[in-house]
Image (cartoon, rainbow, N blue to C red; front, side):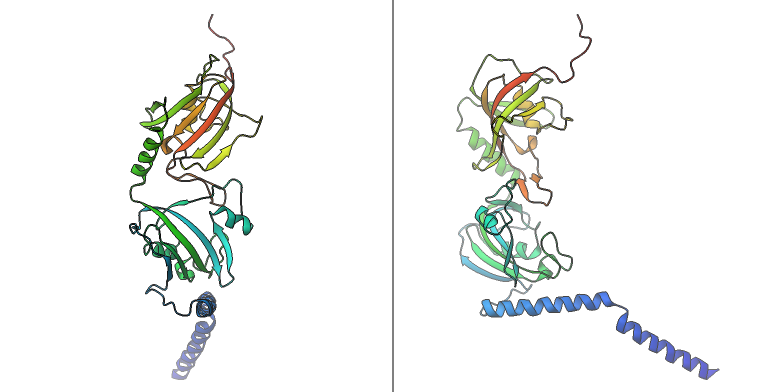
Length: 330
């Protein structure tokens, strides 16, 4: 009896040993992948930046130009220029600098290039930690392993266990994004003679409009079908959309459920126009693309968050309602 129990113990110990050796392949694979990434990362650092020591969190940070403004906090909004690179392969995979996007084959006409507006701490940890070391006006390089990046799973164009490098210029720190945008729109409209306001009772937001060329054409009502030629741009002048020649934007004013419906500010602003008139709509983010902005299907910025939009418009045609009452009152 005792011998049988002893044999059972031996068998259990043997089986346990086999399990320990082969029962956790995911953990072993993770360790191997991390080790391989670290080896290549260390070789990259040693060959290119041998005199640079890492921060305590593993981030490598090199300042090329010292800024003179304030340091950001983790919740501040920032305007930055950046180039993101996979290392050690040195493959540039993301940037909102138009020439960089063109040169590296990922330019998209619908993306808005130029200074990138982002809230700190909403990107990878390595970038967040690096930005906290920068003042306004600073230009720097930061690089790190996937522990501070997209980890073992990756994201988008970045595979798992991928080390990254960011070349960054911190242009501006925005502590209060709502106050910042309100001040921008007020400063902008102060430069426009004959500007007028529209109050939206639903959101309590105020937008602005200007009629540059008036006519005595048909007025626009909430059931009108309109054809509009337009150009949309930001306060800083960057154009994000424009109608093609002789291809006008047509939609029913006041019908927010129609698949052609534009942003709320268009519906409100066009009620002040007549057929043939030209003018401008100045639309705050509350009546535009809100706090989220607008992105492509793969997450690239088309309209930044919290952004004032300006549209140059021409009312090409005003038609009757899309579904007129078949039995109008006599």
